[in-house]
Amino acid sequence: MYEGPVQDLIDELGRLPGIGPKSAQRLAFHILKVETVDAERLARAITEVKARVHFCRVCWNVAEGDLCRICKDTRRDPSLVCVVEEPRDLVAIERTQEFRGRYHVLGGAISPIEGIGPDDLRIRELLSRLEPDAIREVILATNPNIEGEATAMYLARLLNPLGVRVTRIASGLPVGGDLEYADEVTLGRAFAGRREMPV
Amino acid sequence: MRLERLEVVEFRNHDGAAVEFPAGVSVLVGPNGAGKTNLLEAIGYLATLGSHRVGQDAALIRAGAASAVIRAAVQRAGRRLLVDVELRPGSGVRGRVNGAPVPRARDLLGVVRATVFAPEDLGLVRGDPEERRRFLDTLATQRLPRYHSSRQDYDRVLRQRNTLLRSAAGRLPASALATLEVWDEKLAMAGAEIWSERLRLVAALTPRVELAYQRLAGRDDLVEIAYVSSVAGTVGLDPDPAKLAQALRERLVADRSREVERGITLSGPHRDDLALALRDLPARTHASHGEAWSLALALRLGSHRLLAEEGEEPVLLMDDVFAELDRQRRDRVAEAALAAEQTIVTAAVPEELPGELNAAVFHVEPGSVQLSAGP
Ligand SMILES: Nc1ncnc2c1ncn2[C@@H]1O[C@H](COP(=O)(O)OP(=O)(O)OP(=O)(O)O)[C@@H](O)[C@H]1O
Ligand SMILES: [Mg+2]
Ligand SMILES: [Zn+2]
Image (spheres, rainbow over the protein chains, first blue to last red):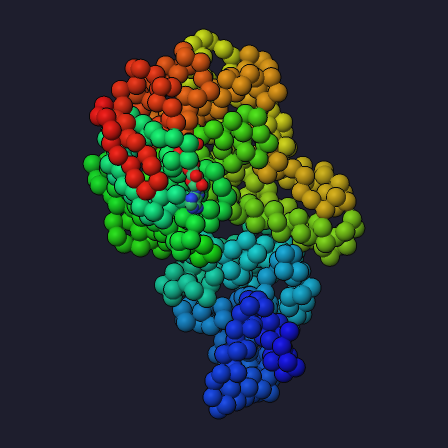
């Protein structure tokens, strides 16, 4: 245990995903050592992102206002919705320039090990978009790993009876990989070759 | 495949040692603790990316050293390949082929092929089902490298499903049921792949193991090998994955309330076993020591034949194989050793070696391996 503020910082950093107690301690002491201006710049970036950036009220992408850039863009087809786990996956798909519809960001994937069930994802919010947006097709673009596949299957079973077309982006993506690391060509091809989602 | 050269650095008790192996039989001799098994372990490691003795790589790095290196030159299909791996505690394995780093260590699997028989293999006959499952899984991966990722997928699905079952704490709310059904489906699909591949493997392996055992024993003892499924028992099943998935699916539905109550997945390839019997008696409980040893060896020799017939013949490695056998069986092992393209055996007591074993003899000491007699 360290003196008050140092321990507070360690505790806060330790709450970040992927940061264990040891890393938290290393980061805290790194911050102690850097120039005050650098530490302040970090603190400001954190405050600003919380003050200025929100989640889009429709698709849960990051947005500076009420709606994200994509939901604001009237040229994009609202009847096609691509479901992704995280905003970074959306960015990866945007890079392919393959897709002209809209998105829905779940905020993760079903994973009992991490304590994440369907109710912890923005699935209800997705269902409530179906009618007002007259959605014709939902494209499932969760990660091609165990949890992403399970989430896709869960959604397909939920959406199919509701009369929407449900597709899954084609695999051929490296197994066990994360969507965000796939190169544009692979991801673009996977997108073009999407299939009906079997249930 | 032929292993031409092996070099180890800071591996187990060897600070540095290099051996040039001839084709045919080589024997590593030296007193207890000299480091003979360690050399076989190093070769086995290149083939499977794991030790046949310990689960953790840390024990393989010489006490006090930061990392260990295993380097080999192999000749396969007329091509000479150089392979090396570096083991660092905590940061995994880094591998290279012909000097070029491979993206993932498992890309090395299949470059060096080895069949390892070691005293620990007695556990294949006497030990828990877990040891026999590991035997099947390692062999299945050698036949079909993608089996490894199928097995990892299955384990991951299993952990997810078990966690969900445990968190239900005996009562499954309707909302969790839909999630469980998804994990059921994933488990059935992933499980069927493993199950199917193991069934095919056992079918191919059985006649070869039987033959190997009968040769060792010198008589036509009846050897039975059966895959025992936790879902379907020993019924001879069609290895069609679609049918197996259906069987697994039905079992999960039938067991649902029991599984929810106990918080664990009760059937699937993680609960399967391989039943071994000699002359109609279960080998695990009835075989004599020498018989159990011979059966374990026959499982390895049968695997060796199977791999040799389907692709590049592996190097046959046998650790202390002669120690526990009667004279006749020793001679039979020598025949098996001579029949392989390349065999490396260890012996603490050279007098145990059968006379007819025409071999290059290497004398092993910590950090040094010297050729003491040519074949
Ligand atoms: N990580 C390590 N660092 C240093 N020495 C080690 C390490 N691991 C094992 N050893 C030493 O290696 C020796 C065992 O080597 P090995 O098992 O190869 O012996 P062996 O020649 O096969 O003997 P035996 O005839 O008894 O089977 C032991 O003396 C052990 O202390
Ligand atoms: Mg030994
Ligand atoms: Zn939006």
